[in-house]
Image (cartoon, rainbow over the protein chains, first blue to last red):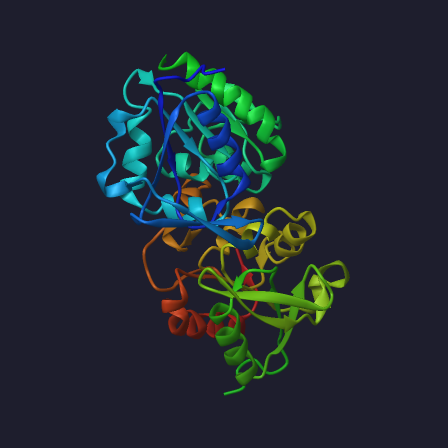
Length: 185
Length: 185
């Protein structure tokens, strides 16, 4: 317990993120002592989905425009279908995500389901071994990733899973990588 | 008027297609005398979206499992976010779409917004000049397409547009290509 005491984690979301891919990882991160900030485009609220239906709103801690990536040890990207489609089209979101991968060091990043679409738009997947929701497999392969069909894949601090069904394995591996901290590539 | 008399057009959709990208092209195709069939995964109804909200249901004419591509002169693919994400993960949908591009001949295909995601999964975009909703530009480029930012793009019978804002130009070019018929590549 409290493996992540003193660590700060950013969760970046836009409307339409999959609720379980947000709530479960957030709960586990906080149980392990991490301080988690929910970052989104609007400064007040962001709306989740359950499958293809709208679900509850959550409070935003920091508006993306005010977010300083240097405050965070790690980044978590939930899936959903609308959420990554919006974030990948937002230049500020792409810059925020890229900052975690800069240079020869990478801060740990965990991305589930459709969230790797954001990593494609940020040009971050070439040569990486990873997984995702199956519908975007071809996009990851075309972007130069080595796509594998496993519940959780870890490659030098990049943790990926396929869907809410994988959430337990995802959380466990995420906590391990977030605990290890920055990886030298 | 009645440029498309005697022509049969397939519209392939799953839940979450953008209503205006379905209704407007369908209306124009029928005004020009085409016989249009709505094809979907379920045999009864399919639900549209307006932006990110669920909208009205439409009747399905032919279930995909019963659809014979040889009956159709042309194919129209509306956008939306959920719709192409579902269709690109469905092997039967990919086979249906591929049939329009088979061999050295291509029957005209019109795809708008996120619909080109289906063409990526069906391996149909390499070397093609086309456009799409901007969020999937990178996926199309990584798949080998020559992506351009125009309201409508036509390349050897493949008509593409970016969003509902382009619908008038899309419809006009679609009708022209559907009228011309099969292209030899």
